[in-house]
Image 1 (tube, one colour):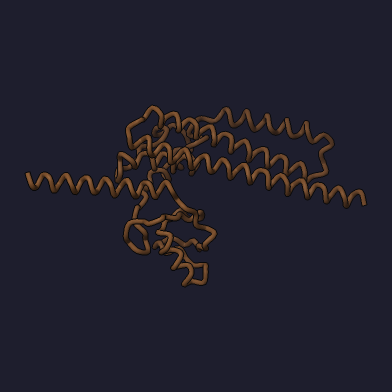
Image 2 (tube, helix red, strand yellow):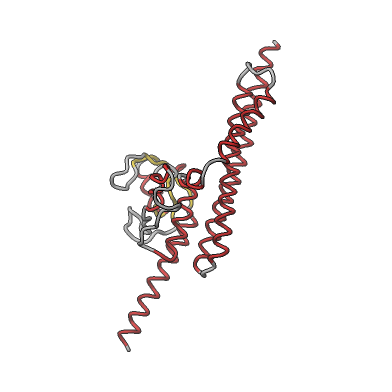
Amino acid sequence: MVVVRLTEVKKETVELTERKYNYMGDAIALAVRACTLTALDLEEIGDTTTVAEVDQSLRQLLDAQHQLEVEERLLTSLCSSSEHEDPESVYMKEWEKDSKKYAALGEAAKYGANKEYCEFRQQVWNVKHEGETMPPLFGAGGNDSDEELTIAGARRTYKCPITTTWLVDPVTSKTCKHSFSKQAITDYLRAKGGRGACPVGGCSRVLNREDLAADPALERNVARRLRQLEAEESSATYTMVQ
């Protein structure tokens, strides 16, 4: 009975740990989104100094995210195993080992392959350099992980692949990162019974409604791009009249 109860306690502990870190992970994700939206507005008005401060805050959030992932992994492992006589010592030893390893990494290794950070930098770049290729985040040849930085140079379309018109209430797939107008992809999936192949040509992922998340940063980018086009059109009209 004691063994059975101990197993139950460990299972409950693991489940509690997972819930706790899922909650904390969600909080960090919200903070990352807030950093992105703030940086986009600041970049638009040319406040590059504060954008750099937001960038630094985002890096600190990603550091915290890494620490949470390590802590969750260690605690889950310790709770699931019965081989450790002194769990606290094992935990501290592994924690210090990972902390030293992470601290020794360069910026490119820490953030260059992080999709959230690369997406953040790409969106900030697009505010003033729409259509231009973003240069490497940490310089060419500076780190083996630089090859992974190419994901940040991908140009993101502001038109829905289903309607071929400007995105409206954009949502982005968590699995393949393609974006769609909310109503268009909702109607598409409904017609497919709630689950269907990504409608973007060449994409092999299968989407369902749970895969889609609102993308406020992309929505702002679309609005910004439309304002830029309107300003360019007004300028061209004024020139012709002159």
